[in-house]
Image (cartoon, rainbow, N blue to C red; front, top):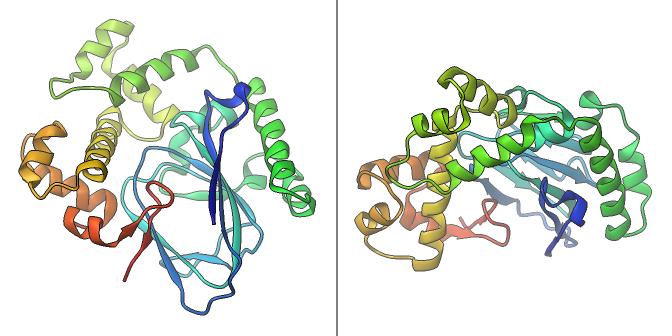
Length: 267
């Protein structure tokens, strides 16, 4: 079972949504979930710490924060599970937790190692999903107020410009528009998002391309590449393989996306 829940108005600039990922069946056959680069960090609470492992067999803490990923990965689930996911906007690691976002790029850490808290026990004891979301929301709001700074509105603007950029996008336009040097913009984006502006543009362009593929499922990769602002089909396929671990046609056949960018992969 998968449900999406909208955040409170006070968190809508930081949290895209809360996601409940549950399976009450104690199945013996493992499930494979692909992780697709989407430019966003997340906070995950899991009732069972042995339910999910990564490709290396590493388990995850009960409550952990993960950063942006620059390539595809996968998680393996066994048995039953019940996870509550906070799906953040790209700048949330800095805006909420005060972190230099690159510290968690392609990585994760127990929340308690980042900020002292007693959330895990309280979430375990909560009787309902609504109570768990209320606990998380209050915690995140308090932290975001503590770590607020003047650069966040500028960062939100930079993100929106990069995510909506067309084929003629140039970072030099942002330099002059914001009165920033190239080095200053690079440093700001790495601090708030975790990668360079050019790499974040690549992820954003790919995500736009993936949305087009989801809608159209076209057989013409050349046409899809053109509509997605790629120079040619080879650049499109290169990014597709890096960020999903598959070719576009394989993605259409095997990706069962109840959660965008975290598909259950058919084998």
